[in-house]
Image 1 (cartoon, rainbow, N blue to C red):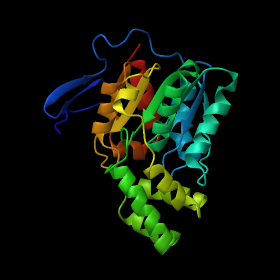
Image 2 (cartoon, rainbow, N blue to C red):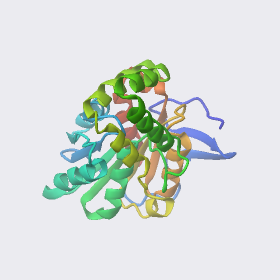
Image 3 (spheres, helix red, strand yellow):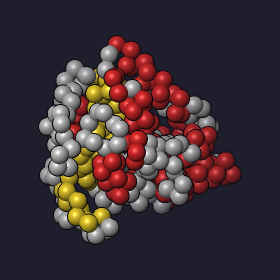
Image 4 (tube, rainbow, N blue to C red):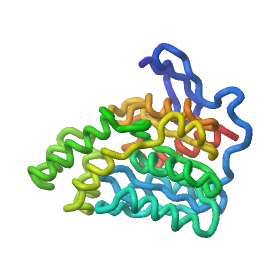
Length: 265
């Protein structure tokens, strides 16, 4: 997949299946400006096996700089998706909110936004992992494999194997968050691996503006999925970065989502 040199804060150009695609915006697709997040309660949902601590470090700073009020609910590994939905419902009781998340958190947030268009001002999707059913998606396969290893070999041995095959920063992050969700972590991983994300037709009905951040070198959360989300949604933009950039500064992930949203202005 050829990719031009990219800068986190500059609109980018890709070739997907040989067809040049430029983000942002899509001509004729924007009929309203992106949301102003000043004073807006914004809920960010963590990824599978990750936690609210990482979600806060990735998003709290950039969102606070934009004037948003940030909430990062802790995952409940015994009821992962239901817990995320409940957190979004609770946050929206007092009025419309912005929603977002990382990986599975982005999918749950987007699905909630589709179900509650009158209560959603914007969607921030970091590293979306698949579109529609998870069949064959690298993130789903990895989650199921990790769940199986955790059940058969235990936390310590599986964590050591994970760290040996991961970038150091990611291994450190997951070792910490996995400890916090043990022993229910395998159940959460299996639940996430079976989650059906919004498909392209559903994303085509998304009323809120969508800002997507994708890594150009992440085999678990492929860039092509981020492109697919942006192609499908009526008002959407994409920013890219690298895993090294995310590892060096988690807030780069949240900043990329917000930069994509700003591109819709």
